[in-house]
Length: 304
Image (cartoon, rainbow, N blue to C red; front, side):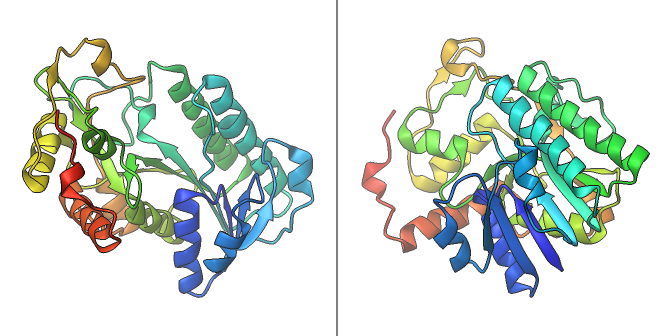
């Protein structure tokens, strides 16, 4: 297959390397030239283009079998999200309609779910996020779903949970830096997925995903904040983070929700098998990677 990965960064580069290993011809789009050597080293043909500029897309090669949009915004404001996710995706659809791919996969986010009651969330649940950035992602999904229904555009959507992996992991990094806190009783649920399993989910969606369909990409076990830090402290021999009131400024997070994201459709309909079924396997592998790379020093473990 000829595969185009738009937004060939943390996830996209790993995806391109795996697809290249499987024998596919892969090109990766980035906004700057800074990563060209790194992409080539992974077997990915680098392409420089800004998807927010339709004219730049018009100059790109056509004839792609698979297209993946895993672009990310460099800024966290709603305006940044709207420019990259909504306008950028609209430009991609318009550009590709002249020669549609066999499959188009868009990586959205489980932040489109605004549920805050600890309930089980499936792809059929309402998407009513309280924050504007999440609302932009919902609008982007709606654009793609309408294109699939009305224009036959072969778009499938992956709603991806919090990504961690080599060099990444929001809560893990906070723990290591000594800035983590347990909010109230720590019962808020965290939904995660390892980067390598995001790659596997994207490939499964390319192979088996249905146009106009949505799939949650999360691991098998949402975990409470308290249980996550309890596991980390026991595994690393470090202290538990301090407890703060659930409504304290240190505990506030933009768009924080409390839900249990189901990956049943990902597993059953796409046949996706996770390499790291829970955070335990994934973070054990990351800790070992740091040790093997000589980047681990238990003496530097933050003391709260």
